[in-house]
Length: 424
Figure 1: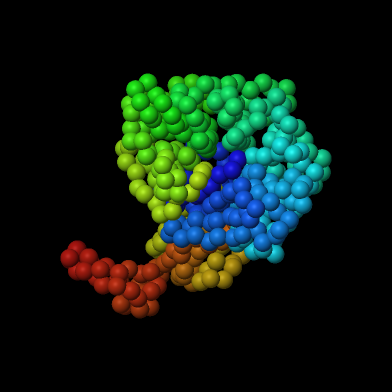
Figure 2: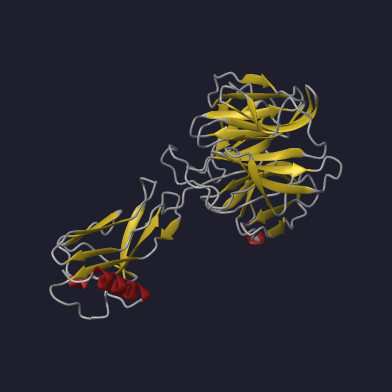
């Protein structure tokens, strides 16, 4: 699918409850802009609204026919014509020209709409009525995963649920089917005249798309959501029965939970575009800088989703610090004052999500953090937490009023609290 792919601000899109164990979540900003030009280019939209533009400085490349971010492997995968041969190619996320490579040649002349399984890196595309897939580096024989698939103007694959969603421009209908060569797609007539972009909600599996055209009482431009069986289709942005401003046309959509991102394009001045982030629970939206032609949301869960918290215990107590990761294949390494530590019989769990001190000793007082590497190879160090172990009697430093082993303004706050508490 030719599209702009955007991952929204982490403060806007957080983990979606109920999603399966997976290392993917909205936590970074990536983007790609594609065009049918003799000089193909990609553009990265960052969270601050700035762009980094990269042109494939190679006269042998002529036009994109599909572009997809492969976030875990930090690359962009695309279908382009190379020396007249329809091929799979890639470039790393920094758009370093030296990283541009051709992964697979000899695709059919109609091959288009690439997608990537975020878990495995396997690459899929539409060709000759089929959805085909190959390994992460384009090697091996292409495998047919779906047959009798109409030619899509847009294609999304829900790898977790094993279904695909497409739009047929010629029949003006959506279609969906299982990732099964023996399966048959189901079609759905759209409510208006045209579909511009499609998306699958990773939280629910719902289908979401934009419609544009003449409704029951005038011109409309809406975003519609339905179940993945096309049941209960309803407009979630705009109203399918009411005419709205002619210049408001949604040409791109991405969704995760109740957050929906759209690209609004001026129907007359098509170079005038903006990106909007909607909260469908309130119907309100914020405008982001720089809208582009079409877009979607990719997502991944940061390796660390909850951080250890500062803990004060007495000598001889059991102390536990814990870090949270939603990837059950994550690898952990705890650090004490920035240095990796190992189990010693009294201290355990140094390579797990939970480090324990049984019993805690004053010498354990330090700053602790944990390096977490998820199954996608993403590494993140948690925030630092202080473990303070109080020994018998007065602390070594009388000014350390909260016994955290450090002097800071919080000690003054603790002193005020102690003073106001008075004596027994």
